[in-house]
Length: 215
Image (tube, rainbow, N blue to C red):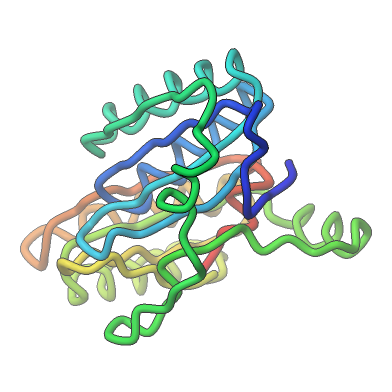
């Protein structure tokens, strides 16, 4: 998919806002696989939430948002969503956000997917990622114990760590599907007694948008 910093006024605009990073990424993966959408921005609200802004033809945006909303709800993401068939040009000044870094958490909280313009480089770098695994907890101790267990249980690689504030932290791993599933299955019970498990999920054959938003 293509990623944009501004919206063509004839495009429809869709927004899906969830609690947690993992429900948002799982929803985005399904949205992109089900409809032709373009990611405009992803914005963290600094208090547990992830807001995905997409654009495209109205029918595709409606399909994507409906699917994403249902998936996020099933994962406990408490989603809020809407579709606007045509944005007012002036309103985009409030909806579009500049790239922003949260100095307290030391990470970017307004972002566009990081895509290489070199198609060969992109295809080589993403082809090796058969699956992504997400462990999201409220509390660092829980996620540290869980990710150590995951890495000991199967041959996986840690991609990075995402923080949302409010104690929410997600660690993302990658590897082949069987290894990532084994790692996530082993990690899930380790959270008990150490913190709150927000999500533990595997995405097989992750979409381009999700790969481009890896921490």
